[in-house]
Image (tube, rainbow, N blue to C red; front, side):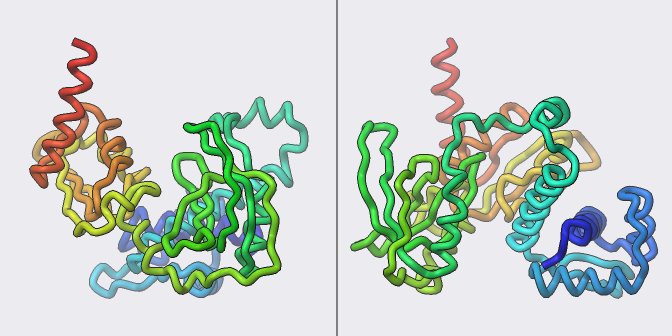
Length: 305
């Protein structure tokens, strides 16, 4: 696995090719120098491309038509790599530069995570997953103020909205479930083989079609093509932080309003993300989803009227 220095360079290369499809080798080397102060030889660049493909599943290809590089479409691998690179970058900061807490507070303002607990369980959960062994834990139900003991086959860990969730199969069940890690306690690794993650790939794939974690409400529905009118200024933010990996932004040069399309199964989390954009967007298609967003807006207006 690449060290911090190499990983930083790989991240810069992937970011540049993603942001500037068709970038030439000379342009890429120049931008690495001027934008990131990285001196990269042609031989090193070729080696880095191989590492990105072999270790991270990101393929940079040469387009003979544009005479430049582009990333072969694999949004899932790309997003996972960028997230990993971000964590590694922060780890490097902590390790090499900021040794005392006062300096950390002075220089870095992270998102407030004071209400989040459970980070101490990551190592144990990942260890159980890698060993393919079941775990037991106590889960707290915030709404009902109750607790319940579970034994599960852990499959993976997923992040959403600054929270982390264990995706697992509870004993006696055959449907995957989400367990908020901040609600777990007394986690124990059992000397019992867990169910294989390969057997649940079809269920896990459902996460690709929704925003967030709730796919059950749209599990048996078809993928929808959502078309949204968006102000060109808003498109810049959406490009930098997509709501869903299927997002395509089309800027309109003739006026201030462009277009955004999604191909997914709309759920409540997606509705919330659209509503958060306020008057900078308008849902156009399909009609039933437009009506649903309109209903939310009318109900909110009534509360303030």
